[in-house]
Image: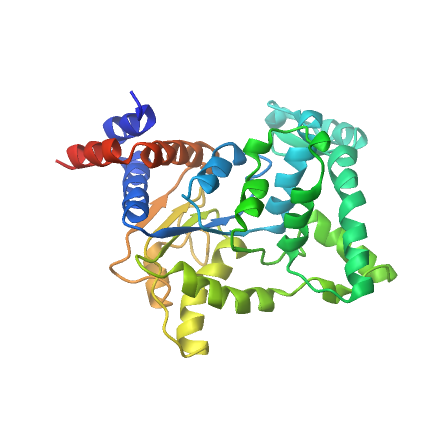
Length: 337
């Protein structure tokens, strides 16, 4: 059996969130199989949650063609690569007292739900490489996008510094593929704070990091290339700026740039935020029609569930589809009857 996960989903996922997962998976693969591309928006702490285990191979096998990520996600993918063995997990975090978390602080661990990032092996170890890069750029007057510093770093650090499996680093996979990427609001991250401190004391020039406005300017052109042919879909994990920033490129191209722009060819949001008043994370896709981000013909899916459960399942099934396309098509056609 070459497609066990796909077969499991098609057989068992019939209703509620499981049905939305199945339908989103089928539509994702159909879009890719027809020559389309897929752009991902990734919020939350997905890198700390080790999403790279399935995301990295998905990038390598052409299932992901561009990314919008928070500054936290891009740095945490690097942390997982260089400090994986130094992480500590806290499966009983729900029962912690304030004193328990104070103890974790004093152990120089930074808790992220049930896991933690080691201060010295992650933040401070990476800082030794990134800060000199910023200082050299300041001396030379170089200007780069935020992710370009991390792309260069992850491609140049020696394998002797790896603690994690490089095959499970989505940042390394994206850098090797030179994937288009935007990092909106990167100031809101640990290294955004570290950069701000070095700018404040005069070690670095703030201008060496290109702005979010410049990210959007570059994304205008990237979207044009990504949307050629069968178009580009939008696969969103969580809400916030990682999702809202890139999806706005379509109306901005049309109304602000007064140029042609294809609509997004697919939309799926995975979030445990339920629909609520004024909540972007919980807004239904239909709302995006009124902003000219999607159309009434766009395949739309909302999966109200935990992305750490849903996304690895979907990606594993999609990797099976990529490796066994004829079998996947036959199974999906049979399931539709």
